[in-house]
Length: 186
Ligand code: URA
Ligand code: URA
Image (cartoon, rainbow, N blue to C red; front, side, top):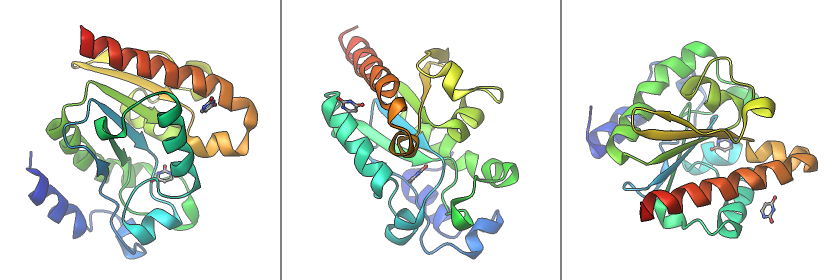
């Protein structure tokens, strides 16, 4: 495993998959390197590719508002993605692209050692929790693995497309806030 600076340098020059060909910026991750809570999304969109920072567009702004409403301290959060370069047209990352990039995310998890990892949407859930996971059916459930608590919930972009998903997502974020609090007290 690499330390932060070496890992970031490595990612910034990565050509392990075809996504490097069209990227403007590698989107490494943002937030606290000692966070208790880590979120994993799918991959950078247009705004993120331009900024080099994850979740800065509309979905990210919604995520910020949800975290604030749930009383989750943004200083205790780290946010990354399954792939660090934007898939053209925001398509879902191909399996070989995800597999090429996942070691970097694992290295980040190893350095951060969060207590909780929340997968935002089906792509993150598939690669981090279980290949057969279905967000609509399995969201909000806690899984314990290798000392981490894992949960999948809706991607904030899905909440923007479908109002009906907001209430269940809100239940999930309350559950995340409660778990975080419980782990800190316990
Ligand atoms: N959607 C994602 O999955 N990740 C981002 O960084 C932005 C939007
Ligand atoms: N805050 C709420 O009250 N509800 C949501 O769905 C999201 C944030």
